[in-house]
Image 1 (cartoon, rainbow, N blue to C red):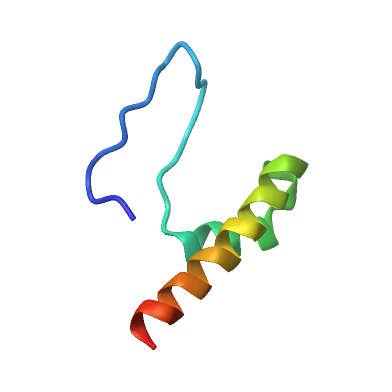
Image 2 (image 1 turned 45 degrees about the vertical axis):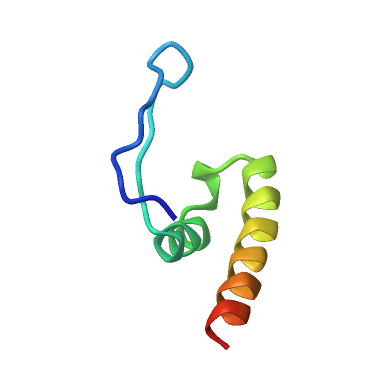
Length: 59
């Protein structure tokens, strides 16, 4: 979780967007062609980890 504006290096990134996790998940379902195969794999693992961590700290 991050509450500040990200600092993007324009030499490394051509385009980016800042979205809450739930919006990324929905966008990946609606527009899977916009995401690389590796991003989908990592996102799925990261998303599961975040849900487990949030459940444990709130549970």
